[in-house]
Length: 307
Image (cartoon, rainbow, N blue to C red; front, side):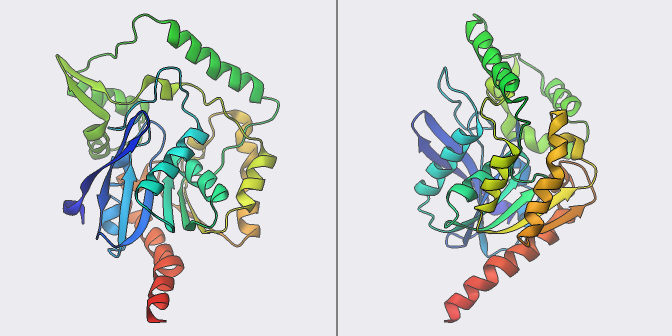
């Protein structure tokens, strides 16, 4: 299936959302959303191991990979990403779909499935709970930090990106993500770098590094979680919980989020590996995802066709 991947471009008001598509034209649609600071290459090793009856649409989120950066003055936040998913789904004329989301992409998927529960049939979250609450006592300071970072950035007269040799860019990505394999680094850099005079620059918008200024509490997260109607699979990597929660108070919410999933009979499994196990060791994750798609979605569509 890897050889059949084609490029995708969806027009948006400020440019385009780019991505890659695997699988047959009329296959069952599965949208794939990558994590923060990555790109759709994050799924390029996993997708070839998944059911061939599906059509996998993996997008570069705005400001990532080859997708356009948001306009000057715009913030990168969860709700804007959810709106982008709406734009992609509308452009592809999808009425029903499933979503695979890794890390931040899973949080976007969780929010979309809460807001549009009638559209999402199966939701597969890779190393995320689908929501990332912030302690209510910290929301103000975190929001202010994000605002300050953006306003300071906008006052800079020189916002040119640093130019690297390919080797130095690979070193930098590895240093920021020490558990990434050499092959994984190479895959992510395919869409993560742009060639310029004198070398390469990272393709992502520098503004994606700033704190997200839109925050939700645990109570709000549980309310959103309760509104999901899709069959839900959570695949947690057994050695990466420290990566999931950037703020100390967030780790306290794990129990409540997990309990909410179990109360609704959703499936939670643990896979051996780190935060990027779906990319570096896809054979570990693929059986969980494949079995879930077959049992929750594909078998249902086969029964519908027989009727």
